[in-house]
Image (cartoon, rainbow, N blue to C red; front, side, top):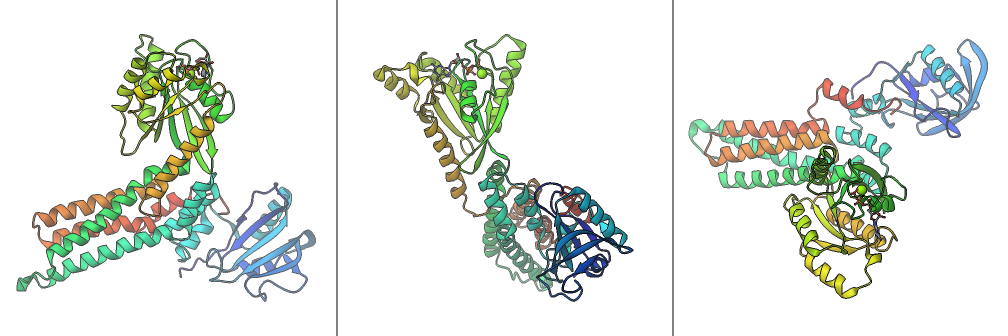
Length: 469
Ligand SMILES: Nc1nc2c(ncn2[C@@H]2O[C@H](COP(=O)(O)OP(=O)(O)OP(=O)(O)O)[C@@H](O)[C@H]2O)c(=O)[nH]1
Ligand SMILES: [Mg+2]
């Protein structure tokens, strides 16, 4: 365990809100520093066993016996604490005055204010958690939907790190097989059976690629699944956005071309955050602003995971078909889903017509009949959206989803190095060069859990935490 020689303190809760504020103190001097200010009913922190709670008062300073607050003090003895160090959590009344005075007194008694993320950083350095888990702490705290929370918790418990460590073990085995061959190269013995090497490499590379590919979905769940609402002008896109999020976010009018720029609004459905994006209607336009808006619509289509294409059944099926044909040409169906929404169903009393209309467009994707105005069919639309995302989640072979851009980057580099190694192996390249690519892959993989890190990377990661974490 690495020794930090100073003791840090910070509020672990937001001072001034709620009933209590918790001030955390961690480091080798945590117990004596708190004892300088704490007057316990049943003795000192220094004498208390780990995982115990003491009741008493906190005085204003070592020299001023006036009591500041009545507090509960939780004692954690190294290594059984969040940071792995001696750690004290002082629960005082939630008053920003008390918190500020207490922190000031702690600093005058020998502690110093913690930097952002410093508690978690110590936890990582002391081997209490790996880097991926430390980052999950930030995700758990900031998760705003149950799906995002679920992923962060899996990561926090180390499910993801387990997966990575299996890949790492396989790569280490591969590298040592190659190096074994090198050691005996003088004797011209090919120890490593190249076809076995190849099979191991293909399997490791497949795993890394699959994990890396989960980022699109993982990121969508963490920050909201992007759903683009597109269609010709006046089909009711803005009306639908407003109906889905339950407020008047976009202007609705019967003038074609009302929406010029994209408008975004988020909504949590069944624990999944969706980011609905209303867009400018698609049509040939000579208006500069409108054509800019259409350009942007096409960009939104590219970035969306789900595209809702609205069509108006009071207009001709040919018109709808044309729009859908040009839209599908732009979609990548391996990662994007198209739902065709037949809107304005309140105007369609003629069942035969509507059946004809639907059958003329249903080859483009699943069709849902709705009325954005009356709200009919919207429940079915919502449950379809939830089902589509849940199918994607359960369809990912790994229980783990990559949600962090830094990890995604590292996985991409790992996959690249593995692919290079595979090509080298196939080209009959000498083992030492193949081993070099494998070591590069191991390096990138190691940056995720923190097996390989620099101070710069750590500084970058933990500075994004807030103080007290
Ligand atoms: N009857 C009926 N009218 C609707 C429905 N949805 C939208 N409308 C009407 O259709 C017109 C156009 O609606 P908008 O929501 O502005 O259409 P849009 O697709 O956003 O249009 P642009 O922004 O111009 O591309 C408005 O007059 C709406 O009231 C519906 O389900 N039924
Ligand atoms: Mg609109």
